[in-house]
Amino acid sequence: MNIDMAKLDTFQTQLIENLFNMKSGYVLDFSDRTFGDFFEYEVGINIYDEKYYIRSGSKANRFRGFIKVEDNKLVGKAIQKLITYIENNILIEKFKEEDYPAKITSAVKEIAAIMTGSSLENTINIINGMDKSKNFPENTFGLFISHRDSYKVKAFKLKEFLSIYGITGFVAHEDIETSSEWQKEIEKALFSMDALLALLSNGFSASVWTNQEVGVAYGRGVFILSVRLDEDPQGFVSKFQALRPKDSNESDIAKYIAEQLLKNDLTKEKMQISYFKALSNTPMYVQTEKWSELLQFITSPTEDAIEILIESYNKNSQAYDCHALNGVGYGNKKTLVCYINDWIGETKYILKNKSIVGIQ
Image (tube, rainbow, N blue to C red; front, side, top):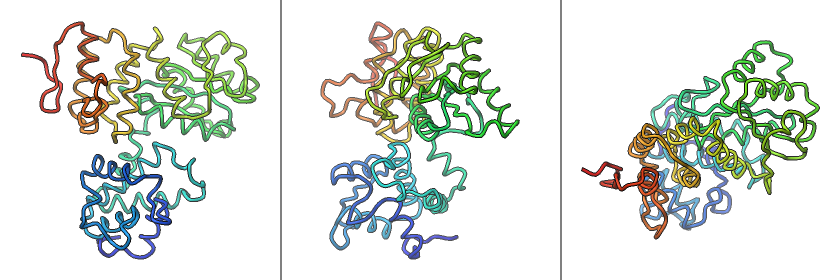
């Protein structure tokens, strides 16, 4: 399939427009301001430039104009960023689920892959932001997510939000009893995890599988954190801390979980390294801003950890150009370099040419 941007066929155009909800002149849930900000920060262009104006000048028409005049790679990049926006912000909850069937998403990912000249596998890796070939990849915090089958979909959403903070979640398959190979994968994850998360939905304590998973964690002495959803903690889980979220928003729950892992004596050393390393991979400013919300909970990082953080910041444009970390336009907001100097106890680093560097 060879795609020339000016010659997208009707079917390809319809796939893109359906995925991005371009009905009645809109693109996803963007306002005029956030639409402009998105294309400025994530794509590097002014979407309100006159060259993108066609017909009414609506957001959808601006995007159509952008597709018409720009080259494959730039348009492919924009599509990848928009898919990342959908998948990381779970916009599927804001629109009707049938607007986002898996086949349409996969087809548009393929279009983006061809436009950017990369393989589909590489495009999916870019969009997902993590290597799914291993249970717990190096330099990430391994969290086994124990849950009932009825909570599987939300467990997967939670896993995606946790990845922003350097946490790799392992979500057990709903049909584990039918596959001996999958049971081996579960055992491998249980004996290599850094902590266990118990999602206490209805029937959690009655499940043989969740009880076994918690039992392994208890026996190994790893940190167990539970989230009370529909059921009160029982058994081994009742001995440990339970989060009681005010709502079921997976993004907020993920942040609370990461906060606890950064504070707990059993997990904070590994979690700090994973959290700092994660800054090198934030794919968009919105993820970087969410990542930055946990800086206030960091205490006494090692010199090695700080070096990892500085390297992560300096190598990722989504970090060093993010106003939440560099302070541009944020008034009195504490910058990343200020956090680092406060942890050290002296002014040892400054921000120079978009990089954090040591004072000579």
